[in-house]
Length: 301
Image (cartoon, rainbow, N blue to C red):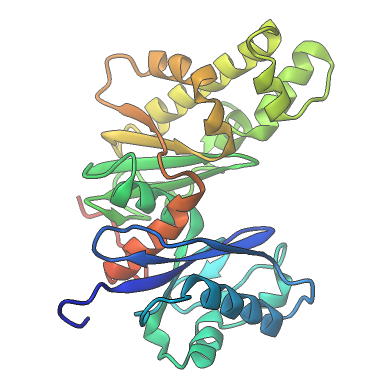
């Protein structure tokens, strides 16, 4: 980086239906204006890169040079090589080297384009500039359709080591006769509510009625108990100082957080709600880029 210049990286968050992009500053991890676009209607790798280029033009408007690009990307994906192995979503990217495709269009070398798992990027954003800033050992859950997870030690994502589930993914870890995701996701809330009432409702509707519907209130209390047990039992060996909760369900934290905290009473673990929200992956991908972390590190602590 040139002395005296503020370095920026172009950060992307690739989701199931849309892509967002923004410049992130190395000096304070602040984001510039966020540009967003739907995934391309024409399902091809070229069309996908066209969208990336359009977003780059919007995000970089009136800005100086950019050091490179950082991606928060869902899996399965080869994050070190930049190759997508997704079949169920964005199948047109299967086997495509996204790094080479974007670098070629940008006139960059491949090392300027880097990738990070989206759940890990979410956590790293909160570690770098959000709810877990300055915390040594952190676990993060994104609660939504499923449960995403990330683990960080001293500001770096870890995917193996003491107390870290394989690949840093907790969703499919065995738990109470099923897997973790069975007990902490949209599916759990809708199923538990249906079992109590016979009604089919969306999570947002159940949450909105919790103040007047005891069944809805009970479901979220049960979710909190489940989360507390998951943290207590599954994260015991990792021993996080802080657990950050994000994702859509975390917007209703007031309904389940007290029950989760009761399950953790007496343990030196604090639950915090994510501060950056949807912007966390953009910041986290940039944190990884600036830290030269093109692939996760092992937990050696």
